[in-house]
Amino acid sequence: MPTSAPGNKQSGFTLIELLVVIALIAIASAMVSLSLRDPEGVQLEREAERLVALFETARAESRASGLAVQWRPSKDASGEGFVFQGLPPAIAMPRRWLSAQPAVEIAGDRLIRLGPEPMIGAQSLHLRLGTQSLKLATDGLGPFEVSQIAAP
Image 1 (cartoon, one colour):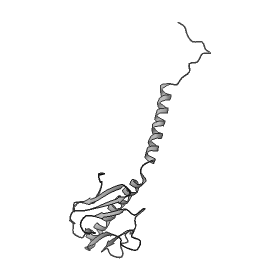
Image 2 (spheres, rainbow, N blue to C red; image 1 turned 90 degrees about the horizontal axis):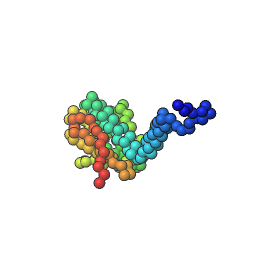
Image 3 (cartoon, rainbow, N blue to C red; image 1 turned 180 degrees about the vertical axis):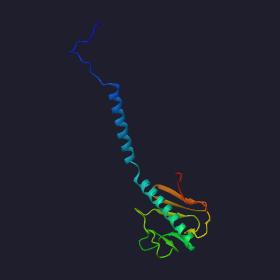
Image 4 (tube, rainbow, N blue to C red; image 1 turned 180 degrees about the horizontal axis):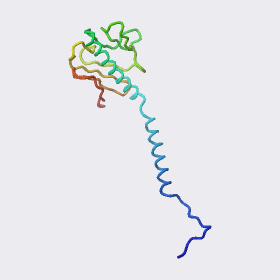
């Protein structure tokens, strides 16, 4: 049987080396695609999740204190922010958005009623930032939930 001479080495890559390189390329491309996510969408999602948490906090405080609590977009000189009306002064709730001011559209009157009744009625509002849009809604019994609005 012929064997290769000791001085002749075969050149090329092994299968394991190729798989490692492909895995590294896949990880790098995944990281790049995640970092290129739309910052407007991320900002809007963060604002919506924060607002849902604030709604539920105010709703729980309203039930505990027996006070009627409402939320509305602020109408101060700057036009930025929002207001929780009816909470005791000792409860300090945020009044400003984290980043850019999203456009707020509330179905019906310009208020979100948060209590003190356990069932507050179905309510919804839309948050819009640039081309992105999210809906925050409750059936009146469950918590507020965030959902995407289908593009027209």
